[in-house]
Image (cartoon, rainbow, N blue to C red):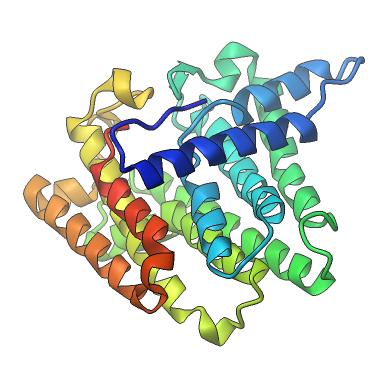
Length: 302
């Protein structure tokens, strides 16, 4: 479990609880079979259990809680989002992509197992996400399940995370301006964060016209999250982050930091977080966890 320290009690306890709940759910979803598929399932478990802060599941659970959603249903949906996130990291770390050897402070999946197993583990986590969302345990309402599937599919495909990853690959061949970097990161990083908030609202049966303030919150924290990541890549400690840093500089990629400078980028992230909190003003104290989570995004050191 990744323990998040030095946080307000509300947020620290929420992180610890959601980390434990997500790990427990993945453990149940991924029993190791007594046959030659075992290595594949072990690789999936290696990627999905016990790693990462679980920001996306916490966003989903905290949003769902605003609308009285059963926690077990929200945890299921959070597992689906985290399965997509885990698959994307497995593939992102492959030699044909970023060629990383370290993730969450341990060897990447293709390093710990092998490339073929890593590809299959990523593929299967992608499939698992939609399997979870299609189950009645996630929602007894088939229309809710369908909207959850559609939301996560859009956020993870060519109009979301994968599309942003392609833009990121192409950034090695051409210089992007601030507008293009913003669009890239809205897809690569922001889409899955936004889907987490949206799916919490879907579980809460909030009509689309009632989600505008939640979408605005998600948009702002998505950009703030990536700016914080760019700052960590420049100023962070590899032992704390558990991953290789300074890659953007080595690859000559444009980032929010290279285009805006460290101080302006930090100020922009702070402004976005403050703005995100104001979007939730109508929920009052009920939205405190989401507001604290937004603040954590720019203050984190890993």
